[in-house]
Length: 113
Length: 113
DNA sequence: CCATAAGTTCGATGATCGCCGTATAATGGA
DNA sequence: TCCATTATACGGCGATCATCGAACTTATGG
Image 1 (tube, rainbow over the protein chains, first blue to last red):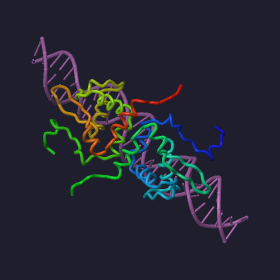
Image 2: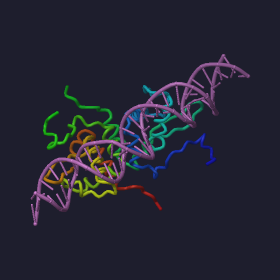
Image 3: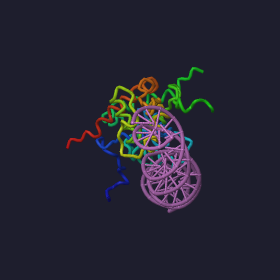
Image 4: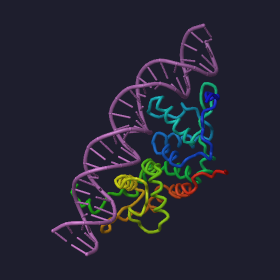
């Protein structure tokens, strides 16, 4: 427990990803928004890039839920922290899931009105 | 509010299905198990068919969460209640999502050991 | 008419969640 | 060295969640 956890945050391995945890992480609108924006950007993004109407500590909370469930990866880069989607791991473990979620997320409601 | 709600339970229309609600409904292991068994059976199943180690009232709760999020459909049939997956609606609204969840659910962990 | 079976409803409870504000590092520049 | 920026950690608060047991409803059957 005394490894350099400050440098390397804990990420579950690909084989450790659990479907309920991932689904739960994605079941929050705010986190869904984060994932959507992350998927839109092809490069790792600093946390501050994503704009949400919540306190910064709440952002940290959401990022942690996403990271601990294996949806995103966070790496330190100077004073900021680069965040990226673990698309390959998610695709390997839950094929089609992320694409389905991202595709659906873009269409909130096909309302005729 | 005085319609025959006892006969016809409330189900959200296809257009009303919301991704966060569906993901949340699927993020519980017990409910995931229900969905998995429902997908395995090609016919509507009575609630009692699905075996879970929880109290009957808890079952009712889980079925309600699944129904109100639009994952399943429940219809009365005498003394029992037939439950079925809303596969077509889910596929139309969130293409690939259910398949991804069901496919992933069958493989808890591809551990080499 | 009464018993049985299948589900629901109704609290209650302990846990988790989403959110906040504040305090606290860690880095980079003046 | 001091300060601004970036993000975490630490409680705390109200809401929701998963679970239970017990009482209730609704149909089927003797």
